[in-house]
Length: 518
Image (cartoon, rainbow, N blue to C red; front, top):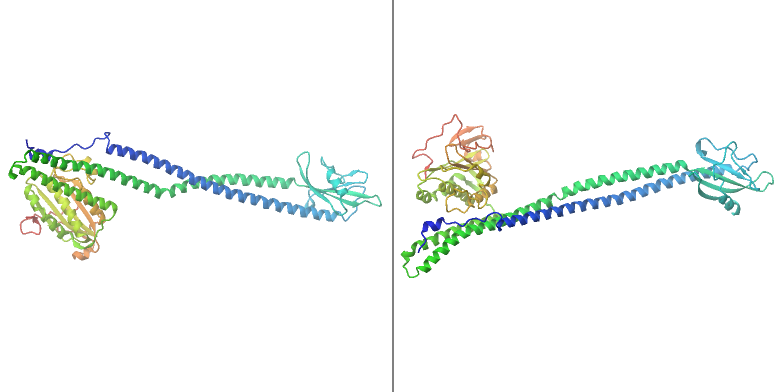
């Protein structure tokens, strides 16, 4: 038994449901990959921060060690110079039995004093002063006694209370013929030790603060450095997602004509002995579905080429009004088949564009309006210029667009629930691509009196000069509107060709510039 043609044409396999595999599994896989990419980005950011911290730490350690060493050496050289001058000044005089001079209260000799040791081992402290605990240093005195004359013994010494000293023990002739005395010069280095300790703490605390600041700065700059990589990953994920959705939707859309062709072939097999006119419906079905598949494949190929960036726009000086007239004339047959009248108002609208793509843009919008209009309705196509560009508006008198469908209106393969049969869901996506390639914008909204309105704004150079209008004047349905604002969004419900309240739109009659396309 042959399947009725209408039933076959209306039969459409259901789209894959969420959670039953296919696209849902692809989305889940994308989610997992996104988490992996985010984890890799976090690890990379931490590694960059760690590298920045290690490099900063190395630099701080090198600079800190160098600074500490230079300061310590400078202080040590200065104190040695002071000690040497003190020794030279006091070795001139012979030791006296009353003991050395008391320590100086200030100046270069501050923190310096000397101790005499007689040949019999008696210790003579500075006059009027006591000797700090642990002094004189017996080891240094013994070394100075055993050294040749004029060969003092110098060493660092730490007292029992932790005080640091530099001591120099030298031989000297005693008063009269009392033999060889020993003089031990003592330099208190407590102030120098405190200074170096303070410097060390400053370097440690400052270095730690600098390291923390470097880590924070490294973390921030690593995040900024990864912004292009993150954007590239996002673009890759979006491209993969679009590719999967494209493949899933394309396979679904191809199932419909393939199913109908398969059913028609089975019908032909069952009626292989019948005459051609007896199986004409099956052949007509195959022809119709082949045409549908051809259109679908061509649209998919165009979108695939646009994604790869191989499709170029050849911009030449054109008039959008002439292009709209050519495009709508090709849809006369479709309008007559559906008893829909196409009314065209092609006002001059010069711009720089690709004639082939602009004709395709007008064809898509007008074809969409015809298919969504009921029998006996009118589709209005209006073209005009505005400061800096041209405007195309297509109005229909169909059921309009559901508010929840507006955000997805230009998505690939998306079709509303009440969409008429025969479409591929790619036309408006191609229209958006053509518009964007020309640097324009495309929008849609519902009309107050019913139906939908699509309008396209395309930029153009020297529109006012080319159309003979003064700059700043826009054309609205043939009525000049002074002071039109370029790129101003049109009223959502009426589109860019809605006349101002004080201007009544003209009534189109036979013989006017615009009229029904026949």
